[in-house]
View 1 (cartoon, chains in turn brown, blue):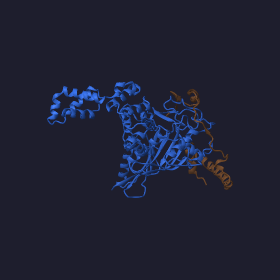
View 2 (spheres, chains in turn green, orange):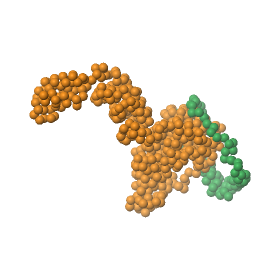
View 3 (cartoon, rainbow over the protein chains, first blue to last red):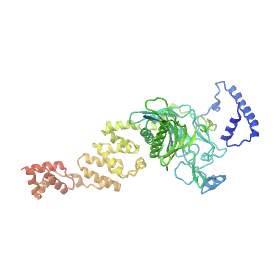
View 4 (spheres, each protein chain N blue to C red):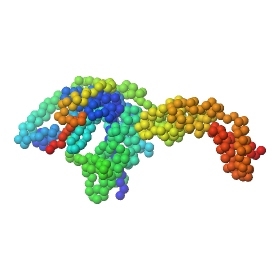
Length: 93
Length: 471
């Protein structure tokens, strides 16, 4: 069973803030999700199925030859903030 | 009490492939910020990575060169963490199925430092902190890295430094990285603890992050060893934590402890398929690799009659060793070839990276031709040296500076005549010699050498002079 502390830890790792009143319902949801994983675990107990690599593919590789990169203007187009060609993360005041 | 150092290293090495690990952007160093980028390497949603074939090949080479087993069933994993240098908020790396395992690097004292693993991963972007803001350049984001993890087998600072130097030499040799610490293409994390001499238990370790020079590494390790011993001696405990080295103060400082150690939530990278290196791929890669430097060293000693020290100087850089072999081809005095390289040629090389590229303006065949003239007695050592200098100045072959007359040498008859002239011109020297001053003959030899502009054989001249004086 997932605890409130675990929910807070996961939220912290995901950079999410969780209000105290949300804790109960989030914990309940998370337990349902984990419960669903049990269903998957039950199915994959059959070792003949490689769920880790479901498509069975390997070695899909690219040749090491360079192609032009994007223009810097295009790269920075969606940036919230940029300066002198850099992405910028401003100090929070 | 005496303490023993226990140390293991994690070494990150940037691979010198042409393109990044998951996209076709160039890996070139030093471009303007954010000009070597595309939607893949800046982590835009909806993009998909595609693994660079050369990265797998280079990593396999690194494994083979360090005696690793190549994992036939490797895969890529996601390592999740949130920091602005990582635009996807995860790094694609390898977790439980790394490409190479169980290798070793042998030190000069014969100790083998075992390697736990070598895995492939992507580098992060570069952050510049200024005026309280953070400026991000993603040119380095997605540059391929290998991380080489050693077992805690290192027992001193010297061993740690030698281990890194050996890795550097090996990786440069097989041509997969330039391993320049100052440019960040080789960086180390040092895991270090101390324990009473003779103890077999491991002490509590700390990890010093991101060492980017040998001098910082030496200072940081010494500081950390002293700090840990002080703590133990004063009855306190070393706390397991990650530390950073402060170049300004020469101290290490705590960054984060064990309790807030990262939880990376590794899982299989769903956007990439398995990496299965077959025996055939290993075989093909092996065939492309140069001779093992250690084997080459022994061959240089046995086949060319070099001292181990000379051979070591040559094999450290593959291009120099290759150059030597070409220049020594058909030469009797192979040590003279070594002396030409380590003397006049090295004198014109500024630093290690120039040694590595070894762009010398005289082809090895020309050096070979010059030394063969010496072999045949057509030129003397001083002429060899001065001609080599002229060749290096101009890039021209020896024939441009040595006339036929120079190469003809001095006939025995001419030499006898010149010796007689020298005695005639310096009657006192001959008298002194007859009076018992052995050294007086050297003045006469000098006169003969001067008259022949150094072309005469001084031993030969001395013999003739002595016999003439005696008559």
